[in-house]
Length: 239
Image (cartoon, rainbow, N blue to C red; front, side):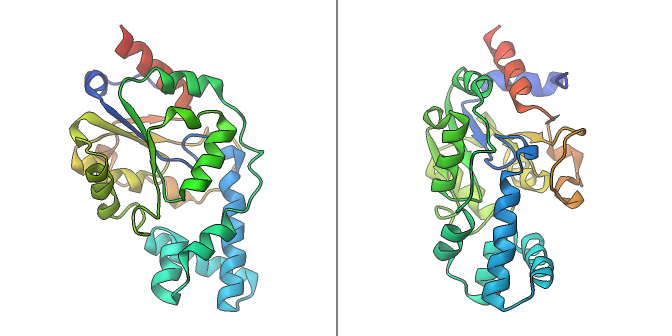
């Protein structure tokens, strides 16, 4: 059962002109564990580049991720790693665990206005993922880590650049994201925010801190099922 839309959140929805979606673990459920493949490839990359045993590389990778927003940014800042080489390596994965999702596609197609993907991954990874979902054609564009000059969410700079590049008024925009800390800046800028969490009964690889909500006021709605939530949104704005 989808969480009911609060009155305040529901009143904002008819005014939304730009729908902004994170990619990984947002447009597909975390239990697909697609990102887990990338995660372990990043560990292997850290081990090779820094000459570490895999268990030590895992610890270093997670420290870089938490401190810098992405493992890549940490490797760039602390070790001078070439970001293009890193991206090509860690996104060489099997995308078949992501199922086609016509229900999601139908809901997104009925949203009025523009639809965007805003990801800490790159455009090619976004395309391969949305191709699997069957929804690539529904988006007006992808703002990726390269467009953000490799500055990742949750830093404020990429959000501001994204809004400027696409001429988006944050007061009429909404962001869907799986990590609470990545919704703090959108909320501060005036965007509506939706947190997409894993279903509590699903099996997946994630660290507890990734879903820790430090400030509930930065999140307008929480869902465990983006398909059902978007369906409810479509019904509300169509009435």
